[in-house]
Image 1 (cartoon, rainbow, N blue to C red):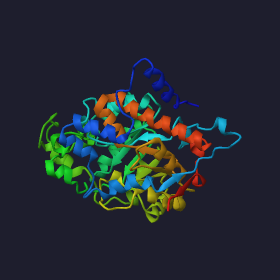
Image 2 (cartoon, rainbow, N blue to C red):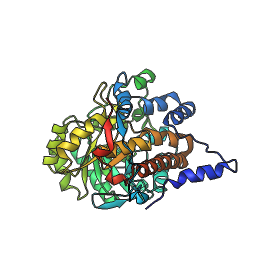
Image 3 (tube, rainbow, N blue to C red):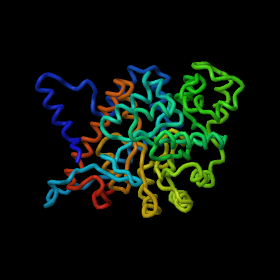
Image 4 (cartoon, rainbow, N blue to C red):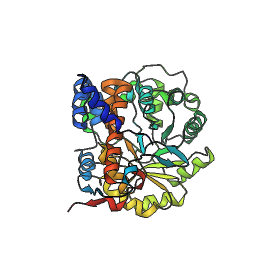
Length: 388
């Protein structure tokens, strides 16, 4: 059992020598520090959400509606607090993963490779975005383990190429994001005219792909703006007709577990279970796609009730602390993807900033689980109640 809680002891011990942490522990403080460091465009891209940002706000507010119920007196609680979990036959030291976030070169020059190093240091799997700033094969040389997130392009041959490349490079799972047939209405980006893709950012997996390159008359120009490759990328980025038929087709391309991310309805989860997906990630893209949508956490119990006995249910959107992770686990998620907090850690201190955020979340999660009298994997509906 990994003792992530010892991180807290180390912080106090270092403080006796005058060595205080250089990064904060509260999400809001991390965000504010990153806002000072980043240019307005990149910061708005990360922090911003769809429309009036009501969905993003609802995601965070939802956690306050669910209260943990600690168990103080339990004979076997001395051994409680283990964070280990098993996902698709693989054992992991924690139930935490880094959510797939693209265009990280606008946040830190080392982008995805820094995330891989920071995540490796605490044994957290990285879920690599299709819109990464570094080709998947280069990230695979560092990340261990890692999963691949697929934005299904309008060109099915390109989708197949991405999946086969990820499989060959050693990914442990394929995560299809289903809620991004087109970019949501994002006023922060619109106000600044900030779309990094037109500057060739977030295109590394495309520009390095043989199927994509075969469609071009000339090689992509690194750093070029409005090149043929950029225009082709913008046209190929997302399929407007993604369906369960597409998902089922992935079985022909890989033997890896297949998950679908961006589900907040039981009926849609049921359809996916019937076509044989291995996992569902309950998520509304952190509020970035549809304004005034249901909070992802409120949708989690519904999806778990519908398909939790048939597929592995994971969760993301609105997670800001280890206690938040505990709530999601108690409501039925078997693992949780964390997004914006580690991005701000990346912006502030590269791989070390990512490690700081992940280690802090895991320390709080382990302490919370121990005080709940359970291992993290054993948290269930009896450990949480909805506030009136």
